[in-house]
Every structure is written in C-alpha cells, then in structure tokens.
Length: 121
Image (cartoon, rainbow, N blue to C red):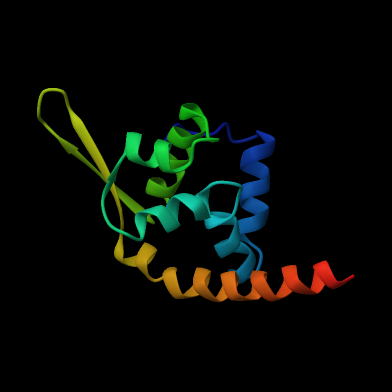
C-alpha cells in the first residue's frame, strides 16, 4: 500500500482514530462501503479478483483493488500470487480475518432487527 503523506487529512484522521477506543479503531479497519462485503465473500474460501468483481457487480475495479490492498495491509486477508501464465492472484481470509465471522453474523442479526423496526415506523 502506498505511503500516505504525514500531513494529509487522511493521515491525521487515521492517527485520531488510532488513539480512540478499541471499538472505534476496529470499525475503522473493516468499516466502509465495500470491505465487509469483500470479507463476507471470502468467507467461502479463496477467490480470484475477477470472482470477487463478479460477486459485487456494482463495485469498480479501482475501488475493489484499493479495498483489497487496505484489507491486506491490515492483515485481514492474504494475497497469493501464483507464477503461472497468465499470473493468477488469489485472496483469502487470514486467521484474524476469520475471527470477524461471528462478529458480522451478530451485526447481520442486529441489522435485520433494526430494519424491521424502521419498516414499522
């Protein structure tokens, strides 16, 4: 992953979040529009870039690539390059990434309850 400029807004915000509670820090790492979807897709095992792209047709290749790099940087997924012709890259959850599965299952259950409550009002 490319180095961020030390004085960029992104770097300053990251430093502020890193100093917050562990909960805020954790959500900052796997939060975002696409990261949880990517992690959930990888729950089934190794996937290639194109398979991930096809599983999420609305995501652009650029955004998918950036999100994968961030997830790899934070150690939630691993990237394996196979030296074949053409080169083949596979992504999979790491051990610490697998630990998130029960968390997003709980969040999914909470989301279902919350959605039902909002539909009633």
